[in-house]
Image (cartoon, rainbow, N blue to C red; front, side, top):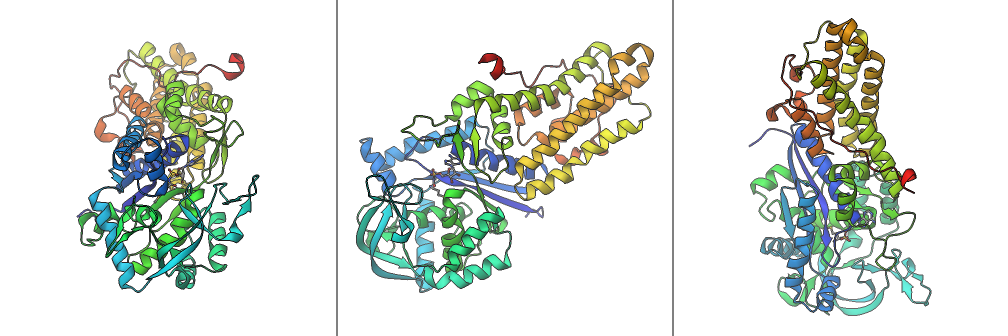
Length: 518
Ligand code: MSP
C-alpha cells in the first residue's frame, strides 16, 4: 500500500432529468483542478463524479419522454459522461446510482441504520418539492404569485400523505453540533458553516426516508412497497464508490473518509446535516470537509429554461477554447461567492491574463530564442539580482498556491499565478533581451534562460487548470513527460542550457475584443 497522503474528492452526482449546463461544468471543473493539483503534488488522489438516477423527478421526466426509466437514465447519464470527457476531466470513477454495487451499498446502509435503532415506521403528512426532492416544514414556505406555497428555492410543493419510514434525525442535533465543534473546517466557507450551525441549533425533526407512492428507487430491505428516499440513496454513492459495505476493501481503506465533498450551496443541508448524521448512525466516519460554492447567473439574470438563457458548456468550449473556459470559470470571482457570467468580462479576462499575459510571455521568449539563438536554449551565465528575484518568485509560487488550494481558494491561487506571470513580463521588458543581442550576447543568453526557466515553472503550476495548453508549452521547452510534476519545480528540475527546442507556436490566441466587436 502507498504511504503517500491520500486525497478523495467528489462532485455531487447530477440529476439525469436535465441536460448538463454551466453549473454542472463549474463544479466538475473545480474538482478536476483540485484533483490534478494534488496529483501533481504527489498525493494519492481518487476523484469521483457520476449521476443521480432515482426519485420522482427522474421518473416523471422519463414518463414525459415516453421512455422506460432505466433506458432514459442510460441515455441521460451518457451525456454527463460525455461532457466530462469533453472538459478533460480526470475522474477515476463515474458512478451511477442504478448500478447493482450502489443498490447493494444503499440497502446495507439502511440495514445499519435500522440495526442502530434509528429507523422507525410512521406516516408522513407534509409538504414535498419534487424539483428539490426535499421535504419542507410549513414555516419554511412562502406564498407564490398564484397563492400556492413555494419552497425557499422557488420550487412548487405538494402536500403528501403516505406511510413512511423515518430516520431519528431529532436525536442527532447535539452530536452534530459537537461534531462541527470538533471539526471547525468541516463546512466551508465559514459563512455557510454558521448557517448550518444555526439551522441545527433551531432543532431537527425526524426525516422521512422512504416513499410508497411511486416505484423508481432502491427497495427498502424487507419492505418492498417502500423505496428509499432519493437523498439517502444518492448520498451513499460516496461510500459505494470505495467499496462500502466492505470496510476492508482496498479503496475504502485508502480513501475513506473522503477529504472533500464539493457541492453547490443549494445542497448544503443534505451534505452537512443529513449525511454526517446517517454516517455516524451507521457507524461510518463522516467526511473531512464539505465546501459549498456559489451560483452563476447569466448576464445578470437567474438561468432558467423558461428564460432560455441557460449556458451550454459545449457552446462555451467552441467559442473560447476548452482550457480558456476551465480557467475563466474559476477566475471570474472568488470560489464560494455567487457570480455573474458576462461574455464581455470573460473575453476581457481571457485576452488579458491568458493571451496577452501568459501566452505572450511564452511566445515572445520562445520565438526570440528560435530567431536569435538558433533554436537552442542558451547557457545561463552569472545570475543578477533581478534574475534571482524572478526565479525566487516562481519557485516560491508552489508553497503559496498549495496553501490557497488547501482551503479551496481557487481564485486566490490563480491570482498568485497571475502576479508571477506579470512579474515575468515586467522582467522581459526591463531586461530587454532584444537590445542585448548586439551589445552583450552572453547577458542576452542568461536573460533568455531565466525566462525559459520561469515559463517552465509557471506552466507546470498552472497545468491542473489548463492541462493541454501547459503541455504544449512544456513540449516547446523540451521538458520530458517524466518531469511534469511539482517535484520538478525549483532548481532540481531546472532547464539545461544548450537544449534544442522545437519550433514555437502560440497557446492562447487572442479572442475578438468585445468592445471592438460591439
Ligand atoms: N442530485 C443532486 C445531488 C446529489 S449529491 C449526493 C443534485 N443534482 S443537480 O443536478 O441538481 O446538480 C446540482 C449541482 O449542480 C449543484 O449543487 C451545483 O454543484 C451545480 N449547479 C447547478 N446549477 C448551478 C448554477 N447555476 N451555478 C453553479 N452551480 C450550480 O442536486
